Image (tube, rainbow over all chains, first blue to last red; front, side):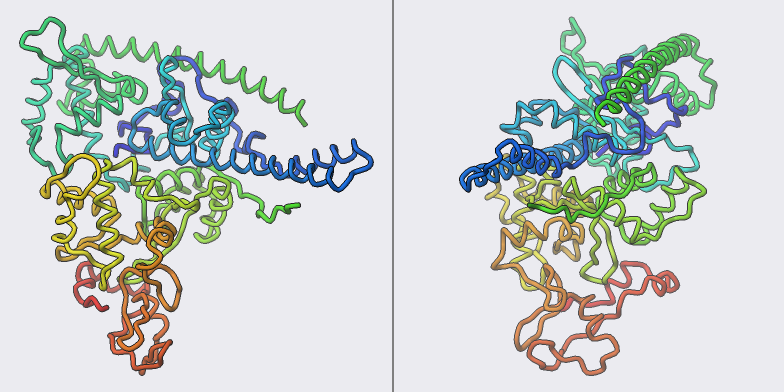
Length: 318
Length: 267
């Protein structure tokens, strides 16, 4: 499992707040407000049922016994439906948490298949409530990762930890360290590395593809399956290669969770040099930083606008 | 008319959120680890606040988790009564938390091991007996060598404990799956005579057959020089373990493995 919640994925120290905007610039978060209190979406309202029952009752001044029974039956059905909705939301929250532990993106069709079932028509409301629970209770943001394919991931909204705050409570450090090595190699080789190059580097570290490793398990499975499935790495056949050769590049999740500058810094530290020692990579990393800063500014502005609109709407509701 | 007896939900802050995230990462933690974790969360997110008493802290979080049908549950390890904590599902579920970590045949292997453990007298199932069932597994065919690795995965993920080639349920599995086990194996499962919870390992009365958890035995017979079966009053023939004392443990500094080998498995 590659969950390392303190940093949202990769253990390199990050500048405060930088992570939140993401690289894509568009705030696809389903909740825009940043307040501590739970949103009105979460308010349990059994009172609503009673209120509507009373309203209906007052509309019919002479309630026959049959009428009263029908009324009670409707109220019961409403409460049952409400409970069922809540139950489904709770199950979806658990489903998303468990799925995200594996770091593989979750598709809408999976959610419908395993959790939502025939409440499919209520998908937007269910996922909105689930997102709100995830934000308020756990500090995760449910982000639509790929709008075309309706896939989602969870991003950790809690502030990234300082170096001295990081106690080694988890066991995923080594796997993420291995990933960092691979990301570093890919970057230094010009954003893609041949499969052979990756394995050669790892062999030098005593990691062999099919030999069981006490920290990584079966490295071949970890890298070719887990990292690729979790979108940390892309694995592609090199075009026009005969015999076919394959190459690795950064996956979309790596782009979201870490930056070129940080990976360059990691590589630099390994070689006991400064990042500027590699001018091409350094220049590229600087450009990447500028892109991210712009995207973040856009995202923040948009979120503020959304929060203002939300606050106005909330006032009207009361 | 249904009246809401639900207590007012507490307030979540980043302290609580970090705590939940880290607890989820680890699956299960011992009490001293939980306390350390709590302190860590305060230090990171609310340095100047007083650290709330653990019980209240957890109750606060649980009141918020109630609407999600999960809770932070406290249990004790069956062998030496150490308090442990895990985030568990309140609604009945099968091995759902495991379901995304493991393949179909791996889950089935766990179910087979679980059944053997519940049926056994000692609460332990031998590696050989589990591996012999490999041919009956659902899903992709699994070789015995692979099954051995899968069993090790279960141990690493704290679903099973291994002792001298035999497997029993980790405290985490008991916390998570007690409800599931009650519903799936109501006839073969065993219950502790004192606390009435699921019993996997424990001591039995040789006369009437009632069983008790080792920590329950320790508490029940504490400072009793002539222990008798609470059910049939016959003399209780087994060694009475000591009540778990976190203070004493830290002073003595005895390693976990040492203590385990000192205590013989009784049944």
